[in-house]
Amino acid sequence: MANRNAILVLGLVLSCCIIGISQNLPSLTLDKNINATFSIIAFDANQQEWGVAVATNNIYVGNSTVHIEPGVGAFSTIAETEPMYAKNGFEQLKKGASIKNAISATRLEDDAAHYRQVAGIDAIGNTFAFTGEALRYWKGSAAHIKGEHYVVLGNQLQENVLSEMAKTFESAEGTLAQRLLESLLAGQAAGGQITGKQSAALVVKGTDNEWFNQIDLRVDHSKTPFEDLKRLLDYHYGRIRLNQALYAQREGNKPLAEKRLSMAEGMLEGWTGMYPKIALANVSIRNEDKAVTWIEKGLQENPEFKTYLPSFYFLKNHPKLKGLILEETFDIRDWESALSMFSNVGRELDLISLAKKLIAKDITSSQVYFLLGRAYYFEKEKAKSIQNLAKAIELDNQNIEAVRLLEKIRS
Image (cartoon, rainbow, N blue to C red; front, side):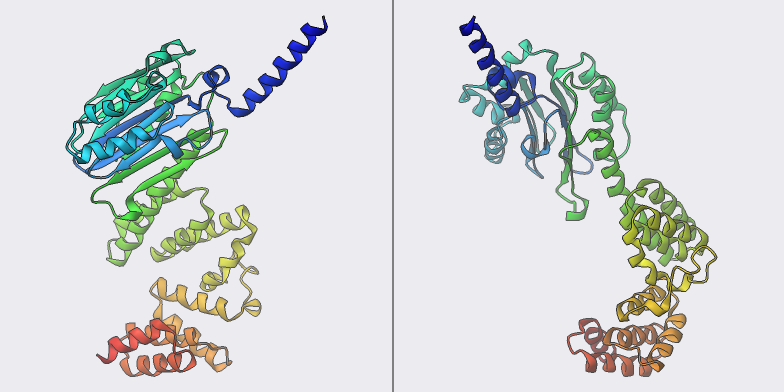
């Protein structure tokens, strides 16, 4: 009996230790760094973009399973994760190897290949994938499906996950990132992983993309990783739509500005730090009531949002903001923010009027004079512009904006 109890205690201790190492089912018995995962890897020939969307029941799935080099290709390395498939694969592709050979070269040297799942795609969209033979013995489905310029793959899945992902990707519209996310969400809706969910990632890179259009979104630990990933992608495109709205308004295209702004508002809900810019866009199209609504939302969601209030000094008499924007509490930075916002919404004459009042009260700084000088420049009053820019530089010869504008006027 004593021996039996000792064995039971030892078994319990070992189980606790193993569970502490990983929460994935195969890891409990194989002592492997298993990523029970599902993913999609794809190529958009028109946009010259490569992308991977992936989810798992472990933390930070994007850390080791997503590998993209624009113009070369991409790899998704899951199950018993081994990033060397990507490292070696990129080297092979650069030497002219096919995507099949680029992956197979590492597979032939890999004693644990039967625990791997790897998919790759080359510079023109050719694909190759394999699912290790041992994965068939894991609980749940383990497989991959190849389509035109894409592969879906995963393990420990409900039966229809991969087929739903493939079908959804083929019928989805929008950018590559949006189509990848739709596919991933479809996989989760079909049952996802039998062991649950914890992290997700979406990465899209293109040869012609500026850094701010490259997408690298990661939810490293969450009870709702799919919802969080969708929200992040909405934020990415929402900010773009908001910038497009402001640009359209500056170009005099109010209908387009209103359309883009409406789209942005629907996508940026919850990103409190963007509310000031949304309010600015609404003021720009003469919708002050809507602007105030976003300011109120910001104050409700984040007590520190009050820091933005001086920027909306020109709305201080709005019925819903009365008593909130108190100029007697302003410091010089607050007044500079108030002046800057007048300029942002194209109200240079109001800026000039306020700046002159501040200067009369000896509330001044290099930036106040710069903003006043720039306003006169926009109003085509060259002499007054030069006078105030010179004063700004006299107070602070490091005011680079004033220095450059003055040089521009005098050149």
